[in-house]
Image 1 (cartoon, rainbow, N blue to C red):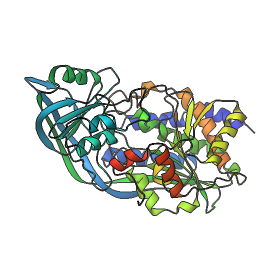
Image 2 (image 1 turned 45 degrees about the vertical axis):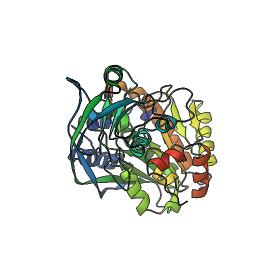
Image 3 (image 1 turned 135 degrees about the vertical axis):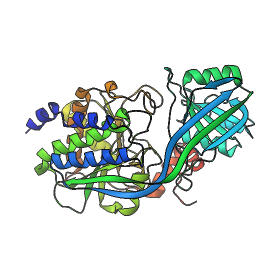
Length: 436
């Protein structure tokens, strides 16, 4: 029976939830707005027909934005603090380090300097260099301040957290600037003394994960996940209101197909993803990994019509995705490499089969994400509905008793991180979880 497809394609459940999420003033991790978003998501999961819908709270390091500034000569340049930057004011020479590749840090004297790096990488780079990796290269080479320059034009300063699990507040003040401000700083003040100042409130806070369930009461389960928090500077429509809207849409569709589910499906909307995967790390520390058959993590969906699914070297996941694409004669891109960012990683690093569901993109980096421009009009209802159809079928496929997905060993994941050139960056950011 395929009548459920028509129901999904005419549903407004997910889109209505997306509108509700983006209309909350802020969903910053640890804020009242984040909790409001979590409570709304719990209610929508109950409305969908899921059972045992609940919030699970946890403690976290809070950070609330104050004023930030860059003073250069007699000018003041626009900037925003990167979350979990320490409160500090430094005056030092500016060094424009371009892309901020690892070898550029090695060959440049940054001791006592304020370093500026771009948010993208050149075509010749062997791998993507994450913001936090560039930040901690700067720290390790003696820099006293960090400026993260957006490569996307349009006067959009980027945000994105710093800090590590062990030390949630970063070591040097950090701000984001637009492409245009970065170009101005490089042209007029490279090598000159500038002053970088960040003011923020550092405080204790709590966040919460949303849980709900559908299907038979089996010990084994398929996790369908997203994150409900967003950076405080924008609506967070793409990152990741759309993912949580998809979670609600999938719960609604799967409730109508509950008899097709042969394994329990657990929906989890995580808190505090944007400040270090805190919610999913808490869940991973407090739940049984062996009972998790697969993870379908929605973070970056809806921004483009074609799905891109990172399968992390799990052959069973690759097969399941390909079978769904063939069944519906609909393109789905699969990426078998590891992707150590977003909430699936809290589990995948230990060998739990997990996918990262997002949309295809020809662009480097986040595009509108992590900027003021992450707003709902960038998205289309049609895309949410089309992708919800495919992902509903994928969850049913993964929940089938006929589908087997072998867990991998942590040693195998670690070896892949080494071979794919990802281990270096994880070590420098304090994210390497394995013993030597």
